[in-house]
View 1 (cartoon, helix red, strand yellow):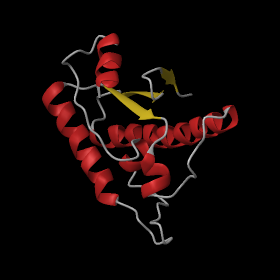
View 2 (cartoon, rainbow, N blue to C red):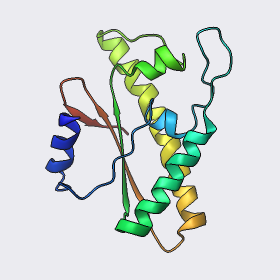
View 3 (tube, helix red, strand yellow):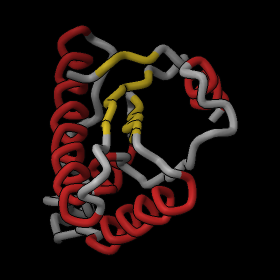
Length: 144
């Protein structure tokens, strides 16, 4: 949490942002599509998606939010221990790249959903979405 605060402060957002945390970050905010439990049974959580978008709407109404930061983190246990959509990634260069691709995929999917939601529910607002991946020591990289 300290690294998140440092990152947000660095972007000049100290005490000026709403913070929503869902296991799996973008994957969780999407309702964990394709998530499975340890036995292979469907373990999706569509109500998390509803919660995320209800919160986004409230944040916009209360605080004039126009930017959404999707900040995911490496070694996300939700991906491989809770929803079983990936294996546990190692620190090898190949696994780091594979892990970054997975995070980028779901962040991009959530960005598309946020923009579609915005066009439907807040058509006068041009929501800007920023996608990032935080390493375990706090380094942050832009997800493209």
